[in-house]
Length: 136
Image 1 (cartoon, one colour):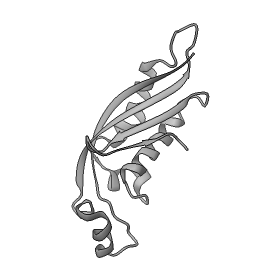
Image 2 (tube, helix red, strand yellow):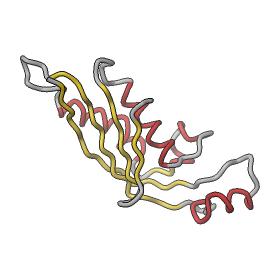
Image 3 (cartoon, one colour):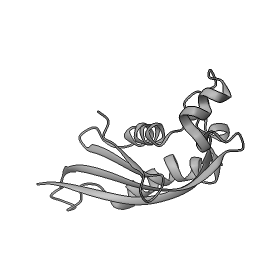
Image 4 (cartoon, one colour):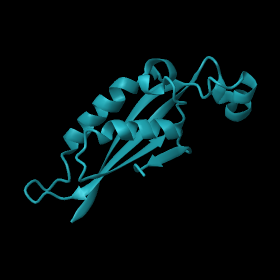
């Protein structure tokens, strides 16, 4: 029996969308107000889903407490109330778009989840704008 378990989390972070190798005008044309040199913030909502076989002994796909601890350690602690461009090493040379943030989160969590499980990350930047990454 294959089941998906999911855990919700959130973090608040600031970022600026821009490319260092472009002029301000190029960045402004592509990223608009998200290119604000003083940054801007979001209340990100995150859903992490793990899919796999239910363990017949425990009845779990995986222990939800373990998943919660991984999310806290890999996402909430390093990203919450941070400036992603300045404070998070993964974005030193990577534009912190919602797409890139979701991929970074997936990669960080993937290292802690057994390879027998499928992993999906859904990141809401706003209630209407969200991205999904499944490691494809």
